[in-house]
Image (tube, rainbow, N blue to C red):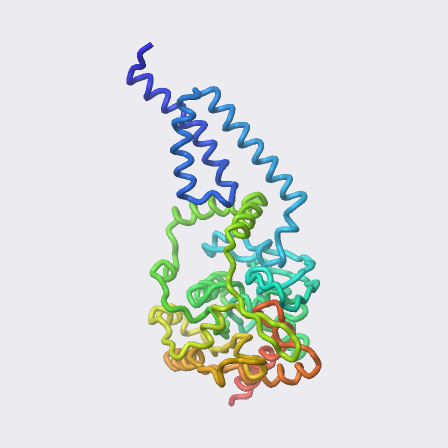
Length: 411
């Protein structure tokens, strides 16, 4: 029988139903990238058209139900094995902020077999430091022991402030409270200057308190070559947030995360890392952080300063966190350099002058403590992780305490 145009249009329209269900199903798989998804849907359209509506619909329903069951099984048996630290497990989309943040009101005990340099850098000969850590978040999705309660000082930064890989008892706010009775709130997650501004605005929208901000800038990744216009956007349109919420729904499923991690593993998408020797200890550092440390010159992008001007009236002080490579450089065996430039610190000083605030370099304080602890076989950074540990955080906590005392005493 000869097909009429009306029949072809009708068949094509019906084919869109199983195709739409297949589209939804494929979003549960982390290895299906947008271009692959479009290609698959294009091919399946013609396959479904030829197979007929009934067969196409039955196949798409079977695929969907099988995927839901598979997601349940992964969540039940494999989810905890996917993660080597709480960060990935607790990272969820926050619609109010318009980006990911930690899951609200979480409190978990996690056995970390190793740190990020082993996991992401894929170094095989590094000294491993397995540890059990508690990870607790508040009602906004930041790592604190309690909700914001009008604290005058708010610490802002990335995973160093959040203390990834370190127990709750050693995070900077806990140490400030336990050692010096200073109540300070933390806005720490990941990102850079554009994200830090958003975190401050997020808290500002939740309280009428006139808090002051202490910004921690990490040498390794807080000094980018450029900041895009997209990163500068503060208020996203509602349609963008709606799209991101739908996308996050799939990305936060156990099946998506598991298949995404498998894809990364098999495609060998790892950050490169370097191994260094310190008195018989094998420690690692990401190559990107080493390269940033060795920059001979650096100028902070102008739009980064523009972003900070949005919260200029709240910024009180800037603290500079050096890389592990810089801290331990004097003690590294068989190094091929005599000294390191300090370009990011100079950029921090220029930034502080532009904002009319002071700044503190934590390098020498960390080096002195690192040299002292090295004699005891202890470190201020995890050997298998790019982040500082409780000893390193203690130095930062002391610097914050000294600064607050100085301000409150009128010096």
